[in-house]
Image 1 (cartoon, rainbow, N blue to C red):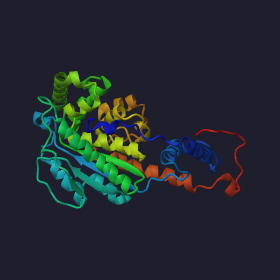
Image 2 (cartoon, one colour):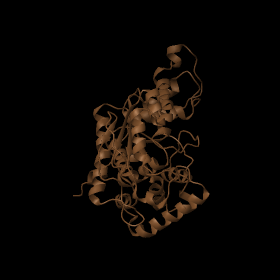
Image 3 (cartoon, rainbow, N blue to C red):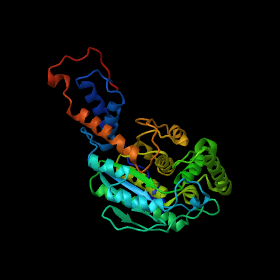
Image 4 (cartoon, rainbow, N blue to C red):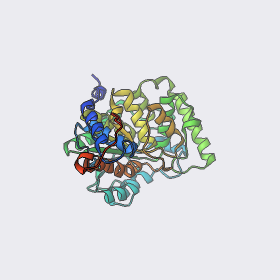
Length: 357
């Protein structure tokens, strides 16, 4: 048995009974049915996932997985590779966007360093889980050995175990890694069958010439590894990164443990696509926060049949889009749980009957 066979165990099954109860409650609240649109659907979805009449978004944890990519030597990023380790430090000390969001919202935050080329800091928010200083250059080799893939998967699973053991209601996964939009674009093209031209974007801020060169790199990566792209684990091993593999494992494990997942942007959605191919039923546990400015993201969302909560032209990563969406989830729960019913408020209800949200 392979070390990663446990990730093929099907996900937990949401409760149809609590979904029906939540729909019934929505019909009884002092508002026209459907007046809060998808906010109502969000509360119903969480009630089914959490097996409860009172869905909740608190407490919520954010795990940021960081890792460097060998393909960065191909000049696919506007920033040097040293930025990955520097941003791990920045997240830990509170200076990154995700740090500000987590602190303002009262969300638990950790950053997990799976291997960076720069200096390694010690900080209470940093979980140091080194595999190697970076992946191999996937333009010339498989990005990871089988052992490295297994290690990265286990790091992601451990993050989900921490979320489960500390009673988290929602899990957010994010990523850091110079070069990771190149890896994600190659994976996205392989997963959807779309061309690199449709999938590749500016990442950290490439100009048009840089994007064209990046398309060429991604095309060459796919030519080298094309024979292996049908297997999602092998695809991740050959094209992915330590942080992408960890996200895949975290998403799968949360779905197996029954923890709702608020999915971030382009790279996180690539991980969600891989998870969906490996673990039956895992997509039921994924709520998609936003549609990013990276051109490939909309194609991945379409492939998943996903409807994100909003579109704000974000392209930062770090879990930032998911963190921005979390208050909407929290408010959806508050409205569902705390609004008065027509009966309790003494308000006359509609004469029209409806049984669905």
